[in-house]
Amino acid sequence: MKKILILIIILFSFSATGISKETTFTNEIFEKSQLDGKTVIVHSWNKTCSTCAKQVKILDKAKQDFKDVIFLSFEQTKDKKIAQFLNIDYWTTIVVYRDNKEISRTIGQTDKDELYSQIRSIQ
Image (tube, rainbow, N blue to C red; front, side, top):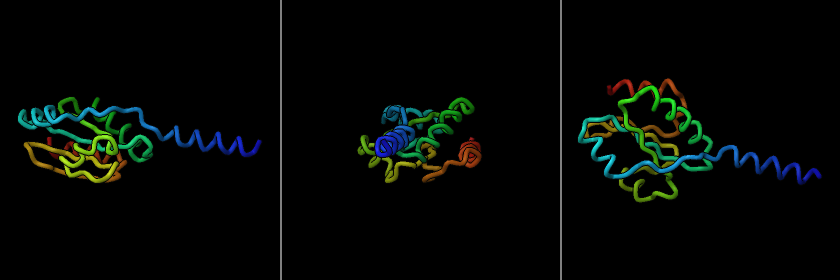
């Protein structure tokens, strides 16, 4: 009985950190947004990453608060070509672009105020 209980707890731990998100990054959207002078935020994540899950919550809120910013994301382990194209090596990476230039890059950032500050600094 104790082993079953431990197994259930472990299974819930893994499923609790899972992210329900899809890849939204495409080269076409990225390039068009850059040509239109938009601020673009790209988020690299993985389903089992707890830090990524925290970032997703913050970025989902930021989408509501910053309507003129384009938010794109991709799953690092599945979309390796995107990771190579953007030179992103880690799951928990957030990169901000504007006017075809990388403005900032953070790895593992989960502080809402810090992320919002990065967005506000380029608007």
